[in-house]
Image (cartoon, rainbow, N blue to C red; front, side):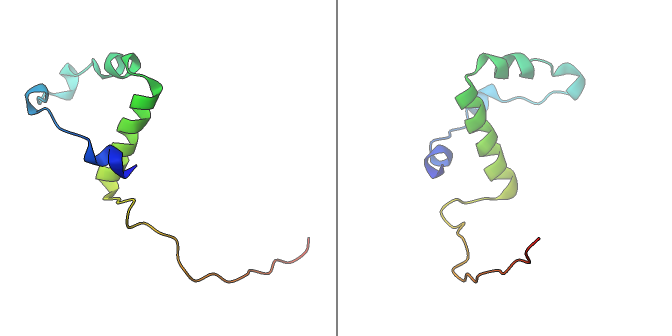
Length: 71
C-alpha cells in the first residue's frame, strides 16, 4: 500500500472550496469510478487522517501463549 501513497499527485487546479449546500456531485463522481479506485481512495484518506505509515507499522516482537479456561 505504500506505493499507493507515493503515486498520488494533487491537481490543485481541480480543487475548489464551496459551501456544503452547493456540493452535490460527489456521489455521481464516485459511482463512476471502479470499486478498486474507490477503495484505493478510501485507503489513502485513512492513511492521511490517521497519519499511518505501513512501513513502520509492525506487530510486537514479544509473544506469549495465553491459556484459556475450558467451557
